[in-house]
Amino acid sequence: MKSFIQLALIVLIIIIGYLFYEKYFSNHQDTKKITTIKSKINNNSAQNLEDKPTTNFIKKEKSNNLIKNLKYEVMLDGSGKYMIEAGLSELNYIDDIETVFMSNVNAEIIDTNNNKIIIVSDDAVFNTVTYNTTFKNNISINYLQNLITSEKIDFNFKKNIIIISENIIYKNLNTFIKTDNIKINLITKKIKMYMNDPEDKIELTTQK
Image 1 (tube, one colour):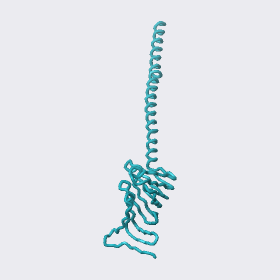
Image 2: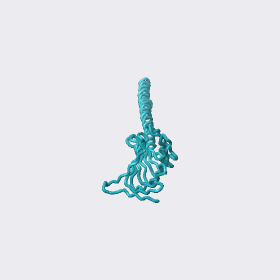
Image 3: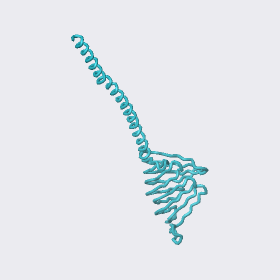
Image 4: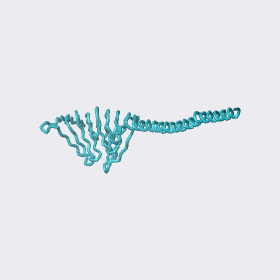
């Protein structure tokens, strides 16, 4: 009888030990595995989250980047040099092309004979790939002894032409002209004035 009780106790201890092992040790290992997997997932997620702000930050930099006193210098093909600077500029990417929106703008076009066209305007849009520039608002152009005021200028770098439009007033030493458009060829130095409506006439006043 005593031996039977001892055997039963031994079996009971073995069973309890087995159950204890299964409950605390075996499950604990599984828990550690799950924790490790979660940790890896969380680390990957953290890495992705770190990547996303960087990408967004770069996009933000590209779409909205303010720079003070920005200046560009461009050598014109066979016709001199072009310089443009602004008190404040905003860099934007339009169709993956860097475009600069400028305010408080000063520009100079210097030909091979060192003659200058000086342009001052409130605003401008400058394409850093083609170098084409649109000047807007309160524009004044000084060219030799000529002064031109207008509200818009389109400078086409490829064609080497400047087209001036909107509320043009042209002055030189003794001549006052009002016209709709003025076209300046930077290669030939020719100036052409014309109206939007061919039937309208250019107003010219001469002072003695």
